[in-house]
Length: 483
Figure 1: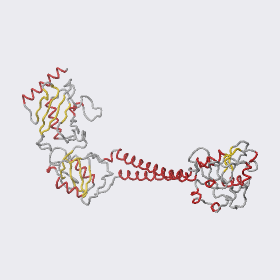
Figure 2: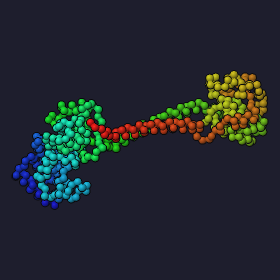
Figure 3: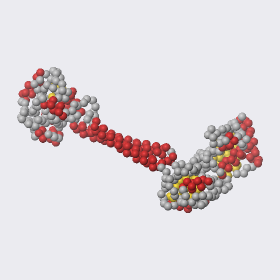
């Protein structure tokens, strides 16, 4: 088939050179390749292409003429039926057979009887009379011509030349839809309505069901005056109409994603700052591991039964061999119970709230209890004391690295042990107002704060979404008003 195609193309080339052509010339790019042609087309008279020369390539398939060639303009072209890359979209260059979309009849598509001359003549005709109903380039440019009459309410004069023309009309006298319909009937491919009253631009629309297929836009009075003075077709300028970005889902999707991203980022920053502040505030109220290790720890035995009997945290009786942590206020608890309290909750006694200070300076500046500042015991009386011999007899030894001025805050100089509370006081105090420290999470005590922060963040997100929905809805609305 390749040899037959070559012979046919060679014959058609000889016929063109012998008979001559009007409006174009054609020849081979390479004498050794009969399937690649170069065409030079002269712009059709009385069109916007008049006086121009346009280069194009013709590439024929190996089974020509069973299948059509491909035509591509090398010269930059602005035409509805020529794509941005220069490919020509015309019926006779489409593969033969039925159009699966139903736009073209089989006889309008490629037939083997077509020749190179008939192809190029069809393209020249397409340049003179574009088909906007089947565009290959929706952004193609055209000329602007002032409508006659200016208000374009009826009987609009057709464009002055063949080609793509947009009509420029004034607002007033009739509905916008009537103007656009009149302009469409005059074979214009677009309508530009000038708001002669101001530079305010608003959507045009109508509740009438009319068959309008051309695009229409509104411009302000200043822009309309500038176009009339400098950019009409006789000034050799081209105008380009692009689709409204509001018809694309990306036009709404991108602002939505930006809004949600900013809202989410704001929530993260808000929560991060709040949690960080809570962590810093709570860390000041907790006891460090180093200070905890300096607090005395004893093994419960019969010698201590007269001093301690029940852990005020877990409410279990002490058993011989249990490890007890003795605080500066001389309240004792199970080490596993009170250590969690001091490390994760606060550095004070769960019962009497006697605060364990880290340094001597902190003791002087951070004492909340006036009785502690005055050198009294945690009970406030400062009268009931226990001799050092009693403490030694009970077997409570000071930790060798524990600084008394740091932990036993402001103890009596004569009696270096703060007064003991009665054995029933710890349980009564715990049951009346204390909270059992929980094991595990380091966020202990933050539950209510974090719930509040998430509630505020959710409210902020709702506000962002409401604003976006209102914004998107307002863009979709059309104004059904008369000029």
